Length: 187
Image (cartoon, rainbow, N blue to C red):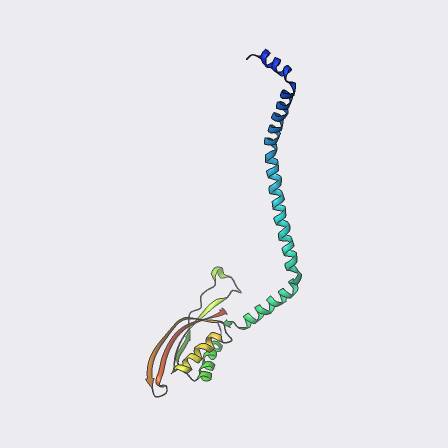
């Protein structure tokens, strides 16, 4: 097929040739425009996500003042429950008060080494370690442990060891209890 044959066929069927050219142009435009459609769709999706985030922030901020006050009260309450690692006498009084309230005998209690804050920052919270050895009957010992756990200070037990003993003071259901306790505090 030569160029003259193609020209002759185009003259014989002009509608087919025009439709073919239009189809070819449409296919080229569709191919080139598909990237623009995808870009616009992704921009629209991103704007939609941003809009939803802004609406959620506006909805959540309606009670911001009350939530801020509640957080400040919670922080103040938590800070009132902290111990100061540098106040050894006051910290030990906490244990001696529990001893008199529960009826256990405090064999030994001492404060461990206070860990240094990372990076030398001030105002951070630390775990102030204590080791305590108490003697008493089962009810007294459990009362002591529950008062430490649920008391005015934020505490966690790192270890608790029960050894059954029998003394004149505790009777046949006596226990020696060794425990490691960490209190939330400041240096």
